[in-house]
Image (cartoon, rainbow, N blue to C red):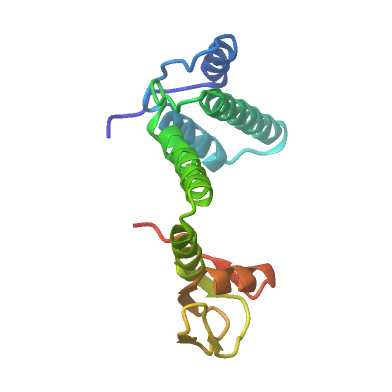
Length: 185
């Protein structure tokens, strides 16, 4: 990874202004988010007292607002297009938008199966969704149960981590019995 360029609130504001004033997604430094992260991390780690601390906190707040608006603006520009165009997007933004492409493809698949009488496809999708494995962490003890895939799971103790079918995971999450874990590859 190349070294991130230095950034400050003025240069970040300039990037946002340029993005907002143009209809198309603007080309940006590929390391922009890394630069922002480094800058904010450095600011947050600096220990100040009194007025200097208030200034630092306000600066972090401004950078947060500018970055949030920049990301939101760039993503919305692409979403509003009929075909997702990843030109000029940064890798982190592409990561966000991959799910949009999945949504469009899934909608088309369900619509096509429904309108073309392919009931087996709909049944298959439903079964895969219900039984898709989800990793959760239990927030409280929970008895053994039979999952949507007809397999026995549990019993579980508080803080246990388990991979269970999606349908069961969603029910436990909704009841605040467990939370979904996002395991990094």
